[in-house]
Image 1 (cartoon, rainbow, N blue to C red):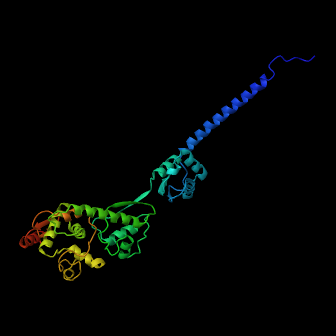
Image 2 (cartoon, helix red, strand yellow; image 1 turned 180 degrees about the horizontal axis):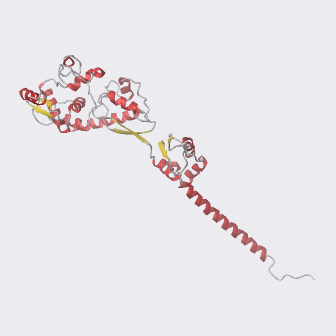
Image 3 (cartoon, rainbow, N blue to C red; image 1 turned 60 degrees about the horizontal axis):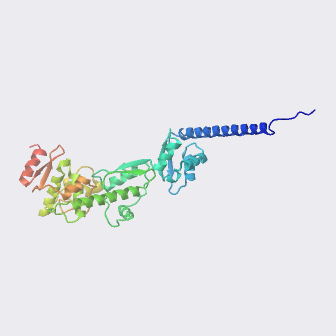
Length: 347
């Protein structure tokens, strides 16, 4: 006799199905949490590098996928597909900036993306020193770390034409300062910045010139400032030295300054200024020619620019080095001769 079934016809199968989907949901949830945990670990775990530091260059217009590939090509041992996915999921990919970057061991995907999105480039620096001439400036640029020497083979006139100052002497036109630049940058960019900086500083100084100044143009101020820069041994003497030269210009007296003569000798100067040099005519021999030389003789700093246009008050026409970096100033030749005997001849 057949047994009759008194329970719900589909009760047990439905219960099994529910168990199956509950288990599947739990497993999926655990997998999701596991994936999230793995993802969090990867994002904050250091990436392997082929060297202690690697240089990464991102060209303008590179898309996030190309950035991920560039990271791998630079020497970071990472799957670019995974890195690109991180860029997308984070939402920061579009903010990645072009530039030159230096990646060090210990960098994580999170830190890498922060660096690229903020544009934290690997910067180098070159310092242009007050009182340098243009030969020294160009030599420093040629030796600067990771700076492309695009102007190295140009003559000075060619260089100034490239910078938009055709026919203008390059001497004294660049402001002495420390300039940072990205790895692989062109020296043209540094020179452009230094040129603009000098334009700005000179304009600011000229706007503050003393009403009593004998200087007629910003160009004259730049030339005088370069002389003051080379003649100054002690910072507090700058305005006094500028006063001496302005007083000499006012009365038509030759400037008689050694640095201009030395500049005129160029690379022929061996470090010893002789009497024959002072007696040899050149556009820069201010013993034989009245007025200012035709161009600056060095890069003046801000203090010398201001001193040139705001000289100290007084009737001083002479000064002599005292041997301690400072100078003694005199209003008459007799007083000056006594100062020379005292400080230079020990009499």
